[in-house]
Image (cartoon, rainbow, N blue to C red; front, side, top):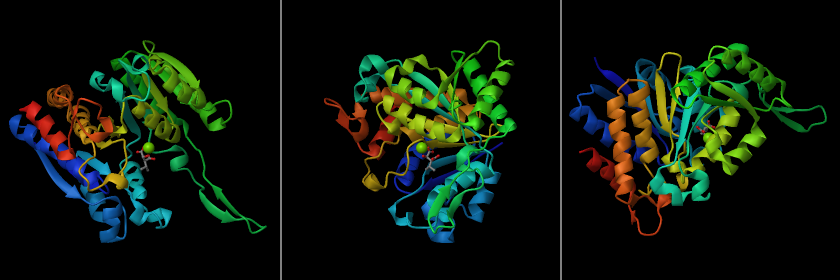
Length: 358
Ligand code: IPM
Ligand code: MG
């Protein structure tokens, strides 16, 4: 059996951080005989430059034939003026939607060594360990109609549609409840049910799905309050489940609680456990090519891939322990640097993790 991994490095810092995750995976592949095979493909701006499409046919074929996808990041200045339909971000959205990767897991875990790197007080964030489950293939990101039209008076009007069918809410609900069962059995569903009918339905369906999980305690929170609670008292949360756009926003907030968005991995899963794994940060064009990006979010995404798609928990544990041990040694990329630590480059951070693995 070979485990086929499509590698889509993308744009900006994507290739730099993916290279470090590959170092780690290549080592474990040999060391533990994991039978991983890798094939690279183009996505985002890099794909547009070659094929005039951010998600071209060869990449569609590659990801459809793969068991898992390791993804870097997409986007950059160079492509910002393109029509929205062919912008690099459309490549990522196309991939999520084409493979029906509806369940996006974004864990926010504070490494104790980084408590000082957070902008919040150490007592507010120490011990933080929460999981955001974001619906990823529906909602306002994909709803129709959408666009910009010209009104009768000549003025332009932009519009998007927030839409969720009952079945879409149900399946992300089940996904989140199952994760809560494996953690501390507390699930908070985040919506805007006081204003938006669509999320009033969301709340109703979550209550219904809850009947199948009597061991999990379900609560509901409006998104504005949730964003406030995340910075006020984040440790009240165990698992949060929310819509595509609310999850996009809240996961950036959760990331910063941990000190740096450069630390957070993610998994995007379909109904059968096939998945795409990517850091939650973007392509960071401002620092691309300088060798200063933090590769840990991508390395930790590789660990999630081994755990969730391939059920290789022991290999995943080894990566996570190695990251922890490397941090213990005091190596820091500049985003998580503090006084007294050793500032390292992207590839030195990868090497430090590799050294701990060995
Ligand atoms: C994310 C990103 C993407 C999103 C962008 C790059 C399209 O912000 O994965 O959180 O909005 O989903
Ligand atoms: Mg985002």
